[in-house]
Image (cartoon, rainbow, N blue to C red; front, side):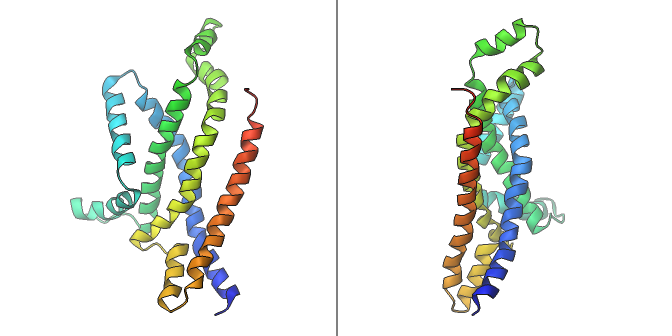
Length: 213
């Protein structure tokens, strides 16, 4: 079997993994910030509901969430559900938004209250305090834990095959069913390369954000 042919087909399948990765980050990060505001809300019912939802999502397997999003609408309401890729994206975005929300919440609550109060004394609005005082420190604080979640996300994209999305591991399994085991191991190259690039990128970001020592 030609290495170039296998490489091309695996790379094509890995594009789905990449799509899930980038869309999850693009939507999950800002949504996570919104969810963190809900968790920290002074309005008790909103705070309780948000924290309960985050607890349920973080306490259940992502694989199960993908299955529920894909099959749930049809089984519960008898309506046609979303497509396989769309269901995967919805589950991933919600799941990772909840994880990112806890990182954001920890970062915001870890900033001394005195700094926020000082900004308000200077006549800054709550919005100005957040973006000019809190946000800059928040970004630096959340990069390391967010980096861990981002690295996990790369590998979690393989869970898309639970509802027959043909991502890279599912493609490699097809070769395995034909008696070729090496393409399955070859998928390691793709994941290791992606994680290696992310490690370098996140390292550079941490150095760029070394303005608070």
